Image (cartoon, rainbow, N blue to C red; front, side):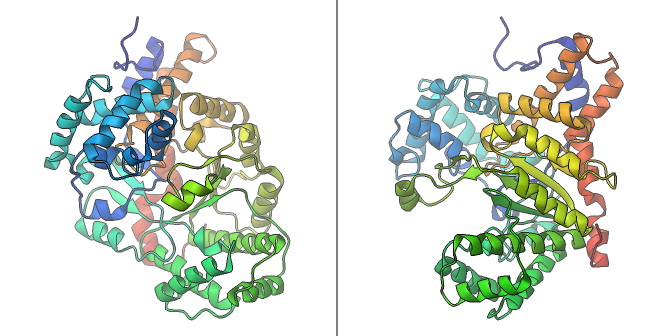
Length: 480
């Protein structure tokens, strides 16, 4: 019987073990999409205890605790940090076969050297040991990232953000590059006139542009996009249920904007047309500046209206949606490609039923101008687990070139989430190792090891081209 979570965890044969330990394990990390707070990196925050760094904001754990019958006061409520940790520790034994069981113990091992199984009996000892370590300089936010060999972190930032913390980090000379990503979801959220107009007030202040007309709005948004470029941003991101690709004219969009700016509510078709127009505008700016654009598609958010009202968004009430993705995604990408304004693009799906759809869609627009120009992003959110990762890697292998994949990301709000890269790398090495042992791939470990290192790090480094970022910013406008 194998020992739980030993050095060969998830590596089921010697070839897989050789590939992981010899090629993948020590590769640096580029985390090109996450939700880490830049202020905590700028301040090199020191957490008071493990609850603060591990449970606060982690709706994966919150959902599991609720399912286990834990009262909300122990999750997002007013119980003490120790009581919340205790409730989580008592839940962990019931997460068997959920990815949280692996992640929990992997993180305890990698960051704190704790090999005990977390449960109600071990909770106090583990809480005290981890919390004491977090009080030392070796466990500040920056040290936690350095411990995982992280080289680049891309945060997720609203166009109205002033990016002061990114500037502060850059000026500090810290060796980890922390870059903002342009995420304009709120800027095209026209579900209610009041909400959109409130956002425009913030946009006016950030851009110093008075917004009365659609052209004013575009000018303000373009000014913010340029501001992100000046602050070393070269990535955008969109969190959408689906791509919007309705036909529209500029006159129509100007009229739609005038309607909502004056307080009128939009029809469903007007809503979709406006979003379609903005996606094209944003994508053309991305192409002009040499960005990589990302589209996270398929989440059905805020399902529990009662809890949304009590706790707000991003508190654990989202699920997989069943939106029709293919035709609009094809139409959107084709419009950009036809106008020669299609930037490097990564698309992520949340519904596993769409795996083959996304794996084949990228091949429609990979035109040879750059290796893997259009990417199907790594298994995301609810698919970010052993079964989901393996299915994604296998589907991409069958229908594209997994060798050109830009690898894993955390998509996390936690500074303790970086062992997810290790988890991905172990699964990747095991897939290749099993096929070598089965005679389905040649026993050429140097070449296969190179491919694995490319997927883990090199492909992302070359794809995003951050080694020349400073020179590009200095030169001004970039080309795709």
